[in-house]
Amino acid sequence: MTSRHPPSTTARITLLPGDGVGPEVIAATVRVLQALGNASGCSFSFTEHLMGGCAIDAHGTALTEETLADCKAADAVLLGAVGGPKWDDPVARVRPEDGLLRLRKNLGVFANLRPVKVYPQLADLSPVKSANLRGVDLIVLRELTGGLYFGQPKKRAVVDGHRWAVDTLEYHDFEIRRVAEMAFKLARDRRKKVTSVDKANVLESSRLWRQVVNEVHADYPDIELEHMLVDTAAMRLVASPAKFDVVVTENTFGDILTDEASLLAGSMGLLPSASLGESGPGLYEPIHGSAPDIAGQGIANPIGTILSAALMLRYSLKLENEAQKIENAVEKAVAGRQLTRDLGGSLTTEQMANAIIAYLD
Image 1: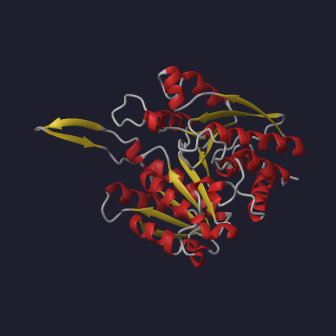
Image 2: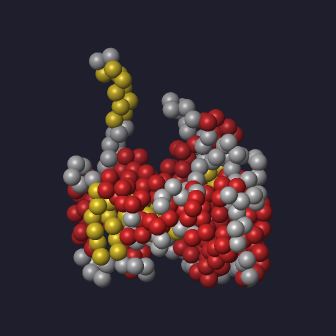
Image 3: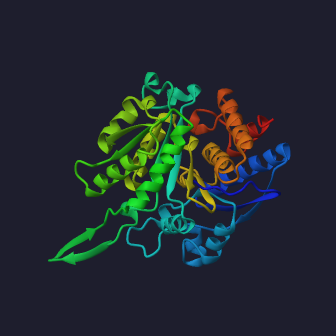
């Protein structure tokens, strides 16, 4: 798991605000971190770069070499969101998401950690029955640098007059082993249960996945392990989500399941994520997209980004007390019904940040 030693003076954070509402939620989060620093005595320095569609417009590439080098030299990277209709051309030579995939690969962040917690005050916002949401507190751990998104070959061609395309779902045993080990370590500090999600009844890559997870489990006899097919997992995430503790799965399945799990919380604007590796800076971002329909209006929900900063404090900077201060402040703001519009409130992005800052002490 990503582990930079606690900064003795100043933690160096690279900001990638990105597109759409990204700059707005990043600005709100920086204010929270600065207030936290003033209250707790920790110190942060920030550098900011373009990434995504805005970088394509400015530089012709979604991620420049200069930006990548600064990210690799930082203690952590905080990202807003990338993409939008302006760059949403399926045959475009360069796409905003290219920068994100390249950044993940170069930082060596192979596991995407997405905690899902339901605030009782917001249970009525979820399409899932409130009775099913009691006690929901789970983590989905998604393998991030293998599978369909990176497997080779990737091809498009015209064959016998018909358009044809292929993607390859590819995994090596070491890619599975390292994310499985992270899942068992996380479970050891929680409720000691891991659910490994695959499609072993159909896919050869899933059969390897299940075999390697079983091998890793032998080193963690105190942790309960269950295997679950992805279609069953999708159903049970809605029907009985409180039964999950740590869910570990491959890249594509994890991408889909984590978006489904966001429904449990009532809004994608609430949920953070951390992309972690064995060393080097972690990458932290909310799970929501760039929301171009509300960009520039100052109404975006910054909670997912602010909670991503709390994960950054915990995993990359080893500032557990400060991480808990942010999480507690968010919980108090939500409990006091101080909410943005997506949550049924009326606060602006800036006002939501102010509410959280007021609870930091």
